[in-house]
Length: 283
Image (tube, rainbow, N blue to C red; front, side, top):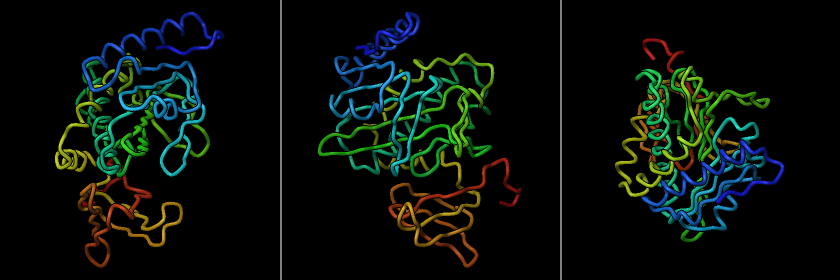
């Protein structure tokens, strides 16, 4: 179902109508409910209508003015250059949910890039950063983010992706999928369809399999990191060194100046990391 104000142009209405039809068709072969698909020309946040619609919902918008990310941060899609979508799913443990959606996002983005003719090197630039970011392995900038909100038996999963180049707000250093593979014709609906399929698949995978995939695609591993421990907004301690290993639902292992340090994931956040292009041969 499309929800668009009368002020939208006919061409935009036609595009969103296509989105609605294609998402409903794709949802029919997954755990999602075609009757709970909503496509908005603009909304404050896709999370709220997805929560209202409940399990099986798929909500997306061409523009999102008040999207939210982890730790209360804002995620704004105000230039029709990216993707803002939320899914209503049966609740699983929040840490597993976050990992599942992150894995789904990497697979979706890489899958569309491959279909569109991107090179293996371009596809391989898409990586993960604990706990909920898609990043460019080479330069370190953020491609997308994930928000998981669980209440009772409902998990509302929000995904934001930078698809096309845009003017970045002050203080944000993002990068778009199109920047990784210039010259490709990338349509937002293709990524929305692929995300729906990959989220559906990932939600059924064993936690151990999700952990292994996330760890294998974790971009900061092997490089220097600065990890905050404790309160997310005001860490009580910091650990700096080479990130040797990540067990996504258990620990990060850092080779510090005085030896290896194990940091529980529920108290840790990677504040900064050295992208692959900036690492020395011995890093």
